Length: 341
Ligand code: NDP
Image (cartoon, rainbow, N blue to C red; front, side, top):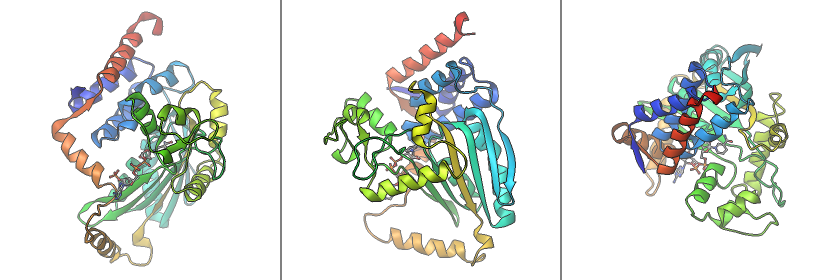
């Protein structure tokens, strides 16, 4: 493993992105989001994605100099057109208008379109809840998950994030795929030569397996059988047809089988509890639930692992596999060669 301080990791990511077709604004936003994921030890959305991100821009499919545009569609609906770039810059541009719209109307919806790779849902919802809002986020991706009873990939692993503001504490957040396992985790298991639980997926002929490579060639499964599959279906509709973006299989067709990052959308909903039924009491009332959860032995709050990691890595920094470090250095070297300029 290679040890990196958080700032060192950010500088490495920035150097790699800037040398490979990203302008300063896009590189800052993408590197910031990657290191935010690394700091919470969510490696599947961290530097592990660098090769994929760079390949998208190098191929010309993703706009490394995107300038996202924010436009109101209805009193409580805002659209952000990501200008074909990676999501983090569009998400930055959308954040303030969304929060203000929710405060004004009590509720606001944000339709992100024309962006690549939405990564994790927790950064957006956590930030909104830090301002006292309650938030939901949904995105689709590529067809990886079989519908209930089927064997062929159709749905994305379609995550959903939820955040609730807390009194004198960071927001309560859960962020989970509708598949039994996030695809990035299966890819990391394949990279590290590990097995995955049999519930994670099936082989190309529908056969049970614990080999991550066989699952990657076959189909992933929804969590909890048909219930997870129905949630994946819901997310497809919310982050696709509702906002005028691709379904997961349409995103795959759009990529033309090149294996680049998925183009698509994200729906974010923000609700201002101060405009609902209990403006003065909702925070204390929510704390009653938190206290009751934690009163039971064996429980922890969703998000608690990430927040503990965040506190730790602030002091210790992070570790990444030597092979990943080498890959990033190679990408920096390739980006610096005259033919790439
Ligand atoms: P996990 O199954 O690891 O965790 C899901 C949620 O459950 C987290 O909020 C987690 O909190 C919480 N949790 C875990 N264990 C417990 C417990 N014992 N008690 C209470 N809460 C618990 O996440 P996934 O593998 O489903 O997803 C990982 C990430 O991948 C997410 O950020 C998701 O958005 C992202 N993703 C992105 C996709 C995309 O296409 N963009 C597709 C699929 C996933 P904690 O974090 O603190 O452990």
